[in-house]
Length: 267
Ligand SMILES: [Zn+2]
Ligand SMILES: [Zn+2]
Image 1 (cartoon, rainbow, N blue to C red):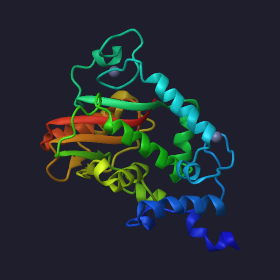
Image 2 (image 1 turned 60 degrees about the vertical axis):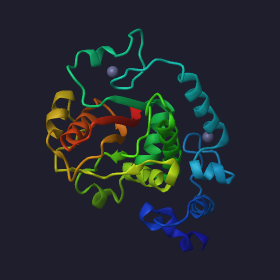
Image 3 (image 1 turned 120 degrees about the vertical axis):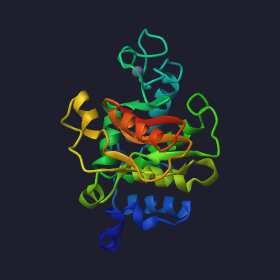
Image 4 (image 1 turned 180 degrees about the horizontal axis):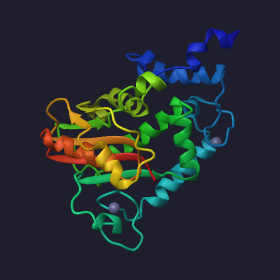
């Protein structure tokens, strides 16, 4: 009975909750967990309080990720692609072989392995929006970090990577757009979002190698209006960096002067 009454919660989509205040939005996750227990996205343990249901993680797994983030903070990262450096300085070997990159700086948050891979699939394929709340929180922290965004100027905007045409129709949602909406709701703590890029039809990037990925997308992501002066491109996974590269080039063409890239996971 209680399941039938709350069925819309199970397949909930961000479109339902546009305009709901933040507290009500959090309560929805608590209610959903009560009606349809998702459990912790990593270990499956039951979620007990408002904090756990909001992030979709039990206290132990959440603390484990925070600990790893703190441990990794001291490491050195490539200026170009954001991946950890082994023994190089400034730029990684792969980036040294490229002549020029369109992004001024790229930051990636988690390796696409082990539990982080599990997190992404719970979010992207399992459509566990609570994990999206956790990811948005990490993006918010990164945007505040001065080594990534030295100064947030008035004209700085977050630019989500546009979905492939038909994606929302086929899968019902866009995982990057949910993050953008959460960050947008954040008001004075967040960045304004500018959806100034559009993606034309192209082959899926998944089966292509580096070179083909770039040529497949080149010219397929276009600006729909003038770009913000300073843009932070937001994407979920970075594989070869081609998507970021093509978006950054399109933004520069449309007038952006400084372009940063920010991805949750790197492969
Ligand atoms: Zn857990
Ligand atoms: Zn690099």
